[in-house]
Length: 489
Image (cartoon, rainbow, N blue to C red):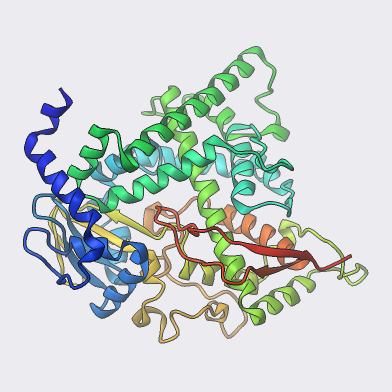
């Protein structure tokens, strides 16, 4: 039955495309565009350095480029980093550019969570998330966060996010660094979602039908995520039912408990608050809290460690908050209140995310035909992609030194943080969908970065390659191999 539902013609085309892609590296002199296949071969040839290639192409085309995929694959893409276009799509004409059904199909593992939802459902979920993130208990939880520096950032952010979202500590920071199936499954899901942006639908259908490739990984990983989350939900519901966990327990505050105990009010009207709603909410918060923060911290530490002048300026700034009667050359963790007004470390984090945004691209589909400020026409079947990675490197946006790591570009003449409009610096999204957890993310990143930089020397392992992985989250493909030594006895 699966064979007939897929269609012989699509299978035939998918097989051709599959073998074509396998042998593509041998065609070194391929033209920019080919009949039938369009610019798709050029895209696949450069997939190993797709982010840098996008930056090169968009610089040459002054920020906007129309990419046509195979004529049989319905791949019509407009790539843009033009700030005027971004502002138009994300803010001034936001209603015509929702996530849309195509986005939901690509990110189907996220269900009906806040990242996938549109219109009234999105508004309702956003109001609810904002209310819970502003809850007094949440801020008390954040203040009590202690940073274990003998870890890797992904384990740290996974543990803290899981504890905050579900109330459970998965123990990634245990001394033996145990394997965590849930975390590994999230990584594989994100890699598969990236390939859904690149490969034609017929190739993805073939992978699903044959049970091969990234779609096979996605299916297995999806099952692991659902099993773990369903267990979290059922155990939490049982705890609350038996009264073993107080709903007013500020010490054990978590979002899952808060969502289970939601009452009927104007914010929750229209929400179907069943187990699927809880599952979708958890996975959306887990991805938001774990992946983006750990990615940003990894690139930040690499950049700072390879730029000694920046490193020394951050250390001097951190010393400035240490009390006169306190020994500066001692192991120390910094409190949230001590870090919130520091300028240079904030500027360095912004500069790091400009060059290496945790989410390197995003896309939209117009509901109605429209014309962008750049003059490019769009229609409901065209995918509009923003490359945040390329945007941070555009000379016409950031100047001739756009590829350089310079925190000073974020500091005004008065010595304060210079505000850059969100449609120019898109790391925390823009318009009505601006990230609700922006301040939370900065707080966590500053706490970890400050403790690491003040207390340790980090030396890069010579010859270790540092390149982005092919994923919807900008991780390093080979990790970040370093030698760490204490600064203080």
